[in-house]
Amino acid sequence: MEKGSTKKNRAKNTKRLRGARRTLARLYRPSDYQREMAGAGTGFAPNEQYRSDFRRDYARLIHCAAFRRLVGKTQLFPGVDSDFFRTRITHSMEVAQIAKSIATKLNAEEPFLRTVGRIDTDVVEVAGLAHDLGHPPFGHNGEKALDYCMRRFGGFEGNAQTLRILARLEKKATSDSLACGVTADGRDLRFGLDLCARTLAAVLKYDRPIPWKRPTRHNAKLVKGYYRSELALVRSIKTAVIGRAGMGGKFKTVECHIMDVADDIAYSTYDLEDAFKAGFTAPLDLLASSDTVLAEVAHKVSEKADRKVSSDTVRAVLLQVFGPAVASRERVVKDNRRVTEDVLLDSGMRQYRASKGVAKTGYERTKLTSTLVGHFIAGVTFEANERFPALSRVVLDRDTRLKVEVLKHFAYVQLIMAPEMKLAEIRGQEIVESIFERLAGGGGHELLPLDFQRWFSSLRSKREKMRVICDFVAGMTDRYAAEFYARLRSDAPQTIFKPV
Image (cartoon, rainbow, N blue to C red; front, side, top):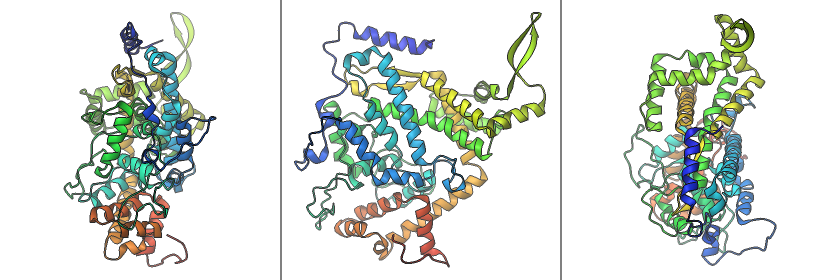
């Protein structure tokens, strides 16, 4: 049965279509398939009738090194601790699957999409698989460390790095005849994977450039956006997708909206499943959260949900989500009849066992997360943009958004801020900052692989040189960063014959 807000939006979209079917722009334009290298007159268009341009983009992503390296990057818990825990690559696969399900649902249900064209699920899937490519080693802790190191040179941010990897760093396309990517006089002729403009637009999550310089404080807030070195690229993406470059910070395609919602859904459910498996928490622990934790979560949710949320509201959401997990199907007498219904167990011991059972039993965990994901996908709503169909919005309805934000921020407050996790955070930041500082110091660039050394030496400004070092460190997996750090600082260095 449709929720009220979803049904209302769909009725509104249907009404808007009346009398306008012949004048609406299409969801995809010919320029969406434009590739940067081909636009420079150096590319070629193979005659491949068996697959679309967006499917070619999917193939290029799957086969690239940056995607493979996601297997060695932390999602919530270090992958070395258990083969069960999600890494960035398995998280990205789950986001891609959820995103594709959302797009399929909208294509089947939305009248507007039957008029302007259906959402291409290949673009959505690529966006889901690629959305975390830019994350450095040690997750958000490594991100904060690299941003601190780059504050005077344009900053660092995971989403900005994702765009840079796809459009510049991956070694698929270059117009440099020597195949080095950067010429001896400093011209950058790299085109990354040379993806379609619409595919690149699908990962452009924040439409604002990051300032060149910001305060060099460890606690300074991260700025989300894209690097100023990619300003021209972003302008060309916008022009290809909607025919104009200026959008005043409001450019976000429908595929990007879907990827963003899918990421929130995956983060709010599957990270919690990992926490249950790790023994960090259980449903009863969440329901028994302290007033301090509830207040902190309420504050964070209020900032994200655009409404005031109280501790009581947070507690009510937790009861709604996890109450059934500590309930039992029991035979009770009701109106002189014996019926079976869910009742909260009276015995504290039985509640405790039920809670631990959910946390430790694979069937129960899978049932819980599967139910939540299905419920959250059902809460997706579509807001048509008649002028620019490509910029139509996909969001979660009000109640679903609240549940997702509560679970997301509980994962952060109770897990990421736990003492065991703080230890890993401090170590990760120390490793990333130490490696960067050593490479950026006198002669440090000689420790870089040969291709990065070549780029470093060819580029002229210090800002560009520091970006080369940042690109190298950001591409490291957790294990590689730890090994590199050990080889620099440890009393027992590893063999010199292992390549950097």
